[in-house]
Length: 405
Image (cartoon, rainbow, N blue to C red; front, side, top):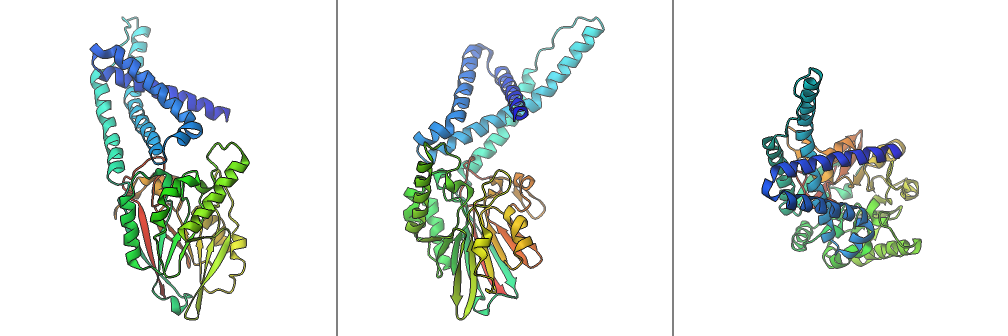
């Protein structure tokens, strides 16, 4: 921990030094004093908000708008990071020249920094900033319907053509608009799905974030109902609560919101769907993660009683659960539906290239995966978190149709 802290402090100092160099050498000389005071006061305010975000800012700034602080922090971080890539090599060259002259006895004056290079760095830094702004202003609510057809030999004939709509990672605390959400909910209902499932992260941190959106999401309709599970953000684990009782009250309110929505929240349990004599099982577990992610899920408990059901669908928030438990221990779970990754909310998905930062953390990070007869689908998320936008990886509604092989 101490080593990490030291590295973090040194990296921050590096960012701030070159961030200031970028601003100082790009700004007009006549306004140097104003620029200096403005830069360091803004930087100080940014760090104060960063450290007080969970304790104060999140509690006093309206839900939704609080997400724009992380966005501001991200944009500033990108600009400073670009300045390091440009100006650090220049300083290395300047130091080398100075050292050579000093050793050889020449007049060893420090070479001044190139104002031109500083302005080039500023121009380059503007590219990711503009891209991130575009993703926020245009793509945050630019929903895409991904249609997937899957075939299973053990699917009961009565469920031929059975349609499942999956949404995931709503993160209602990040929303600042309602009209595009109302529009996509209307589109979902027009499909007349047999089943709708939600695979976790209804809120960012606290149940109250969802209050104003209950009238919208309670409109979701499916012939066999709406089933939901919890995600890692739904427990309030990332908030500094005044007491354990306060945190528990928040979670109780969270569970009641699912009832008000008309959703059946599966907490390590299952439901049996019957249709014309055929039966399938819907299993739902609480959040189950590896490493730093909380592990509340109990798949053995949800699975118990479904042994003789010919076809099983599992709802589990974190796709890492699939390799860790589902495949090795439950080979008769035919289809697993997850979310969590958001596809990192940025990347490229083209025929010739499929890339996202998420792939360096998650083996299965977006879309459909198959191992033997088992399938996993990772939804790219309905909402957003930290960065209030999308670049390349757009918000998703998944439409899955089951067929008898």
